[in-house]
Image 1 (tube, rainbow, N blue to C red):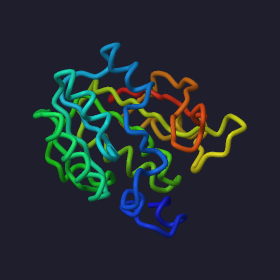
Image 2: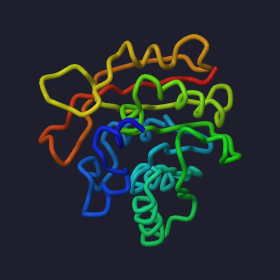
Image 3: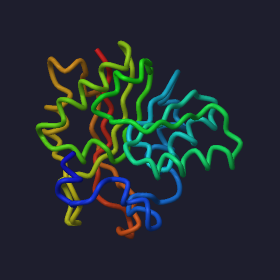
Length: 202
């Protein structure tokens, strides 16, 4: 994907020398808030789950969760956390988010924290279609991604227009809301500028 091309390193390398910059060791506050408000239901897909904090949060609330990531080291860490915390309803699989149909499963909710913004303009339609292939009508998708608004420098900033376009007419989705948010990292003291977008499967 574009992130790997730009950085010159595979995703897995980010997890091999300690925590990645985006791995804060706990769920993002924005995702905690959505979960606390009942924003996730049914079976949940955590797309780009990293080391599993969001999947494990949702599983702790009684939801059945599948976390997927392309980085095997991240998946191994997530599985170890599952064992350590005694959580039995979270599963982790190493797979490509652009080929989710291969899972042979369907989800009612999706969380994407920090994955959408790693795709370039050519890859986004493939990702959106991939999500559509594993979700049923009425499914909710929550995306937390870096924003192009704000003075802080962030990698792969996304515009509001890009989000609206990616999930616009003909994509199988419709945007319900896009609000300003902060995405916590190990680099930004008060988080980085972000969008919190919610979309619904048509």
